[in-house]
Length: 246
Image (cartoon, rainbow, N blue to C red; front, side, top):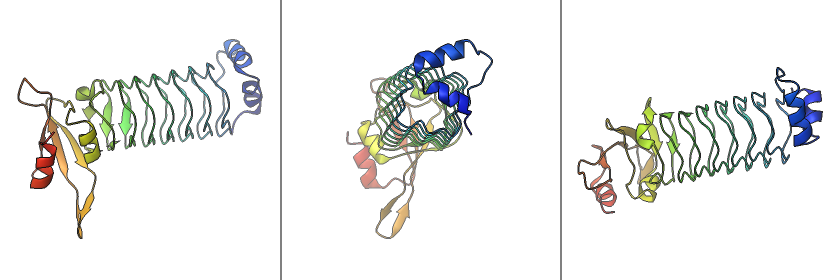
């Protein structure tokens, strides 16, 4: 449960809160489980704060300092975190559906089992981020930097990966899932690690048969093209021709 004193101070606004933080450097703010839905927390110093299981839906956190904060299982649906610093933050099982994370710093953050469906991550720094069973369905990744990120069980469905930076440096600890919609939206321009990046296309039904396709994306062998080579012994001729017809 959140500390009542800490709750009372944060409700007094950014100036009062940040001044209190500056005079209580050894204090770890306890906002765990707090209901801060719709609150204006922009520019607040929340470094190292315990905010796990808190309700921050629709909250304004623009430019907030959340380095090393514990946001595990926090609800951040439709929150505005544009420009916030979440370096090293713990966002395990956090819900960030349709949140605005434009230009955020998520370097080395942990996003295990976090739901970022529909989230805006334009120009976000995700270098070294851990994406374990993370849901990125429908996320806007334009200009996002995934340099040296770690992925396993990550869902890249209905996203455009053609403008993502550092995707070829992602460390794949195991297979992730990529939708055919992602391949089409990216127009095949998905850079890959030299050893190949393994994805599983989402299951789809054809008649009474349920099919799951494994795809290995490798760099194109031709020096004149950035298009990847898709390899799978289970891709049907129709799908293969479609993928090759861009």
